[in-house]
Picture 1 (spheres, helix red, strand yellow):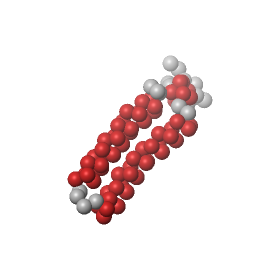
Picture 2 (cartoon, rainbow, N blue to C red):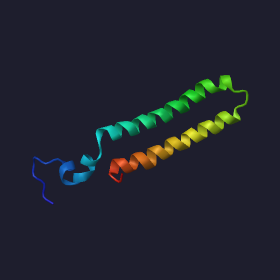
Picture 3 (cartoon, one colour):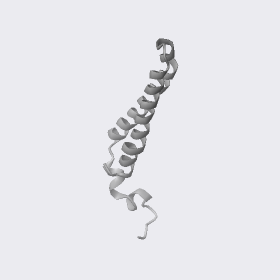
Picture 4 (cartoon, rainbow, N blue to C red):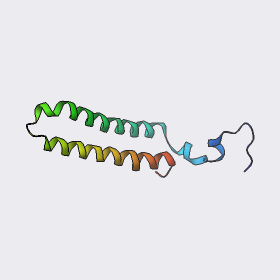
Length: 84
């Protein structure tokens, strides 16, 4: 494929991917990822003062970390490459 000097890479190589992703869809995904990371951080800071035992805290942190990893890898990755 020959590119002219006035065409960008996104217009020639990935025509549907950039246009298929909506601005609001990207903002929604970023908001979810930031909320998971904030929940992990806040639970590490504030929940040890509330809970007597640390086992439920560790379980909650691991669960939130797993959800954050799943959201970042599967959902965000598929949207960014245009599979959803």
